[in-house]
Length: 437
Ligand code: SF4
Image (cartoon, rainbow, N blue to C red; front, side, top):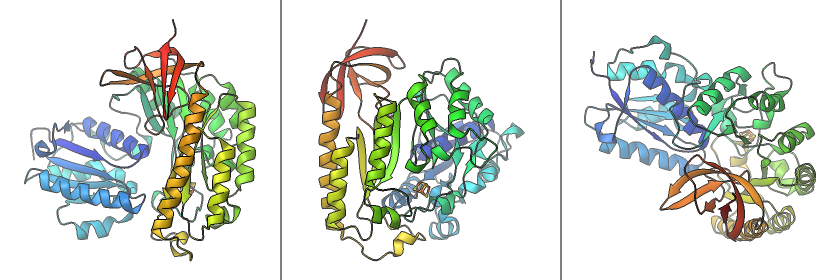
C-alpha cells in the first residue's frame, strides 16, 4: 500500500452538469485523502470526465484521453469517467489499452473504491466511500461567484434525437433538503448566484413526493441567507406552468431568465422530434412570459438540419426568430446519435446546406441580440462581477447566464461584488455600464 496520499489530475469536458459531477468527485477524493496534482505529469491518477453529447464531443473526449495518456508519468493510472464511459464502457476499455479503468455514471458509487485499488491507497475516511454523487453535497470552493447545482439526473422524455435518457436513465430528483445543504455550503463559500440545472428542470420533483415541484423548491431555497440570485437552465416549453412563470416573475431572488428549449418552429419537424408544440405555441408562451415578467430575458437553442427539414421550414424558423425577439439563441447542426430514432430517419440534409442555414440563422439572431441589447441603454440593472480580465471588470445581470450569453463591462468593481449599474452602451453581445452610486 502507498503511504503518501496519491495525487489526482481531473480534466473535465462537456457541459455544466459534467462540471458539477467533477466538483463532487473532487470533493469525494479530497474526503478520501487524495491531493490535487499541480500538473498532469505529476499526478498518480489522471482522470478524464468525458462528454458524449454529439460526435464532435466524443472525438474531443477520445483525443483528450490519448493526450493525457501521452503526457502522464509512466506509472500513473488513467481513469475515464462521464457520459462516454457510461455509453461505451466495454468498447472503450477494449479500444484504449492506455486506459486503466472506465467508470460509467451509474457506477459512481464504486468510483472512489476503484481508484483506491488502482492507486493502492487506503482511504483515510470511510465516509467518502460508495455514494451516488448526485446526492453529494460537498463541493470545493468555486473560483467564481456563481455555481451550478444539479437538482435531478436523467430524463423521462423521448425526444427522438436525444440519447441522454438511454445513458442517464429515468429522472431521479434530489430531495429539497439535500439540494438545500449543497446550496448553503456554496453560499458559505462565497457563491451568490446558484444556477439550477437538470436535463428537464421544469419536471423536477415528479418522481419523488414533491407535489409543488420546481415552484416549491424555488420558495424553499429562497430562504437561504446570503443567496442573491437563483437562475434556471433548460426549461422544456410544455412543462412551463403559469405558476412557474409567476414565481420567476415575482420572486425577487429568482432571475426572470427563461431558458426555453424550443428546438424548432415547424410543427411537422417538432412532431418528428417527438416534441410538443409549434411556432405559434412557442410565441404564445413567450407572450405569456412577457406579460407576467416585463423585464424577462429569454434564451433558446435550435436544431438545424433535422432530417426532412426543407427550405420552407427554415423560412418558417426565420420568421419565428424575427417575431420571437429572443435575447439569446444558439443554433446547432443535427447530429445523428447512435440508437436514437432520429438517426434512422430519411431525408438527411447535406452538410453544406446545414452549415449555410446555420450561418443564416445565427446572423439573423445576432442582429436581434444586438437590438435587444441596445434597448437596455439607460436602464438600471443589478450585476455580479464574475472576474477581472485584462483589466476589464466583467459582470452579469439577470439577463446573462454564465458562460453562454454576453457580458456587461464595468468601469470599476471587484470579483464577487453585487452592484447597481446603468447601461451606457451596447456592442453586439456586450453591454457597457457604469456603477450607480
Ligand atoms: S427533454 Fe432534453 S434530455 Fe430529455 S430527451 Fe428531450 S432533449 Fe433529451
